[in-house]
Every structure is written in C-alpha cells, then in structure tokens.
Length: 404
Image (cartoon, rainbow, N blue to C red; front, side, top):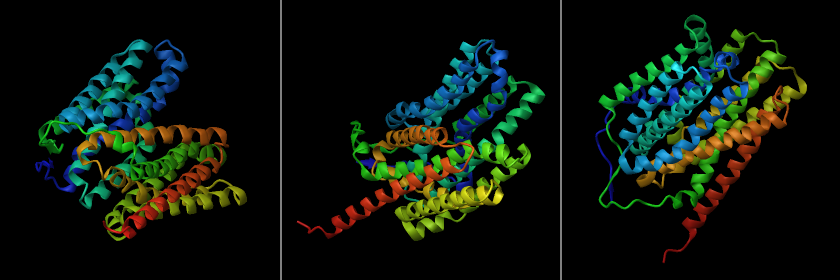
C-alpha cells in the first residue's frame, strides 16, 4: 500500500522558482562553456581531443547517471539525492575553476555531470510525485522545455561575456555560485515527496521496459526534443553560413522559436484538458510533420531565410510543446512507487535516442541544409503516430472484451 506525502503545497510560481534552477543549470554547464573551448587546449597545455572529452563525457554522464540515481531516490527519497547532487555540482564547478591540468579539469567535469544527473532525476521525480494528477503538470513540463530552449541561445553569449571580462575560470565560479544558491534555497523549502510504502519491499523495474505506453511516450519526447536538438545543430550553419546572418541577428531569430514555445505553454493546460495526453501528442506529431513539410518546400524552391527556415520552426515549436508537456505523464503513469527509476530510464533513453539518432541525421545528411531537420522530425513523428495507433487499438480491444 502506498500513500503520498502532503508537505508540498507551493503555488505554481513558487514551485517553479524552486525547481527550475536545477533543470537549467544542468544544461547551462554545457552551453556556457562553449565560447572558451577553442582556447582551452592552450590554457591547460593539452590536446583539443581532451577538451572535447570534457563536452562529450558530460553529456553521456548526464544521461547515464540518472539510471543510478533514480532507484536511489526511490529508496532514500528525493530531497537527499537533490541536495547531494546540487552540492556535488557546486563543488565540482569550483574544482574546475581551480584546475591547472587537463586531467583535473576533465575529472571535475565528470563529477559536475554526476551532480547534475542526481539533481535532475530528483527534480523530475518530485514533479511526478506532486503533480501527476494535477493540471499544473503539463504547464511545468512545458515551461521546463521552453526554458531549456533559451539556454543554448543565451548560454554561449553569457559565457563569452564572462570570459571576456573576468577570464574562463569565472564561468565555472558563476556555475558554482548559482548552484550554491539553488541548494541553499532547496535545503530550506524542498520537502520530501517520495510516496511512503507500508512494506519495505522495493518493486522491480522490469515492468517499465514491458510497458508499451512507456516506450511510445518516451519516443514521443525524443521526437520533440530531438527535433529541437537537430535545429540547434543546423541553424548556425544554415542561417550564418548560408543566409549570411550576423551572430546577433541569428540569436534574435533563434530566440523567436523559444518565445513561441513559451507562449504556447501559457495555453497548454487548456489543450490537455480538451484533448488528453494521446490527443496532444498526436497533434504535436502532426505539427512536426507540417513544419517539416514547409522546411522541405523552402529548401527545394527557396533560399535560406527567416521565412523558409524560422517560420516553419514556429509550427514545429508549437508541436514540441504539445508533445513534451504530456509525454512524461503518459510514460510514467503506471509507476508511482518507482517514479524515480521510471524518470531516470525515461530521460536516459530519450537522451540516447536524441544524441545518437539526431547526430546521425546531421552527420549523414547535409548539415548546411534543412534536410536533417526534415528527416528527423518526419521519421520520428510517423513512428510515434504509429505507436499511438497501436495504443488506441489495444484500448478499444480492452473495452470490447467481455467481462468474465
């Protein structure tokens, strides 16, 4: 038997101010570092490959580490995992700032990723614990995704300004300070939300992998966020390299996509109430295909511009919000007692899909064009749409089966 703790009673704005910093910092630690990557081999007397490892291994550890910390949060609670992860992130950021060798820097980056993965899984498990059956759930996921859309646009710019005025070490000191503030706030206000079970047995995680909804909605999330990942990877090459945008105008154009996502999030609660989870995801996939079609037409019959590249992304951006706002609820609905584990596998699997399939799309197709974006969005959307059809068919069969 399971009961839910009732200590979490914050308003939605207060809850977002408490939780969002941990979500943002995990991504910011990657993007804010990008402007100084070319200079780091000379600074630390190492090779570019070693510095590239500091980027690649951070991403890998961020996803894989959640598989470890998810089950731990199911056993000991969300609060200790979050506070320990946030503190570890802060200490590792300080260590990276003080590093004088490549080996030490790489080690602290790995520890930083471990801390970020622990904080992330505890944050999203808390969202599942508290808001699973409340309309705020879709708003929170939508806002988190929208905020993360801004990080790749703002993070490098912030990193460049900080490095220019205060040096590269100040980038990691900034991350340390922000993490310390988030942990201090959480230590005072983040109450434990893990459901309390009357027995001490720990349910198996095998049902997660046997769940058809888990896989369909996890792939749905991968379709939405992976499309944005491919857009992020190709947009500079298309708009700056081919369309001749300056970095400033490129940043403004890029920011409009994130703005569309944020505005859409404002109305997502009403959409979920009207269409349900499957309805929102289905419409999200349709918008991905529509936007991809417009991108393809622009690539075939026009030249790269705001009209042919950014405006179709507005359509896709709405579809992304429709999708990512509800896929977590759809994927995790059956796993209240092991929400931490389910959240961990959900984010780990989608991160692997996004990084592997998205990177292959950009690499194998022409990354200077819209074709990687068109291909990824279309193929993933059709795959998810087929899965939703299977779910609908199974549900109809279940309703029509005689009761024995």
